[in-house]
Amino acid sequence: MRVDLHLHSRYSHDSRTTLDALIERSRKCLLDRIALTDHNTVEGALELARLAPELAIVGEEAKTLEGEVIGLFITRRLPPYLRPEAVMDLVHEMGGLTYVPHPFDRNRSHFRAERVVELADRIDIIEVYNPWCEPGANAAAARLAADLGKVTASGSDAHSAHELGRTWMEMEDYAGVDDFLVKLKDARHVITAESGTGRRA
Image (cartoon, rainbow, N blue to C red; front, side, top):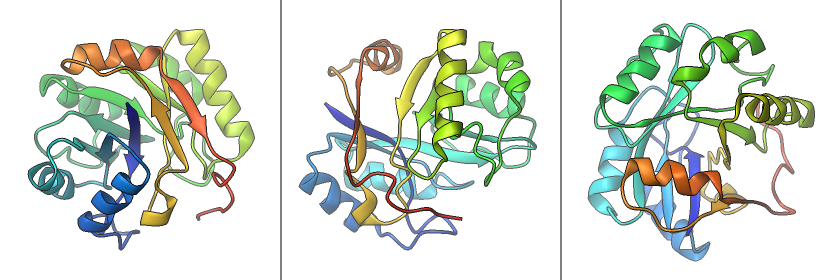
């Protein structure tokens, strides 16, 4: 399966991409599953799951009092501006997975390395490649994920439809959330030549 676990739609303040455009682009790129992770709202992801249940993983990128935390396979909104522990616990209460995106990106909300270590028991997935991050930030995330023995992911962080399909994960099909995490551990990270050609503030 081709899976992208980090992308945005018009439900985010910094994107104008419609859900129909995401569905069309996903089919063109042969993506099997996408996690819609809009900023501080789950509304678009729930609507996408209604429109294309075979495609959608319901997610949200919540801004905490420190860095940002993505909840995957969630059922309701994650309130912003909570402590990261509280957000991660909410995700797990919903039966979802916690995904820490761009943990060391200096241009966006990010965590101190020691805080990622402190939060490790609550973290399921660490993003080790994001096309908008500086290479050093991605490399630091990869090193820490390896040190902590965490499952890793590469996400497109697409904010427009044409950015979708530049970066994805290739993994075996899964049965349920727990199995998804098991299969993701052995997934192949695919980063195309077009990925990372731009920079977003």
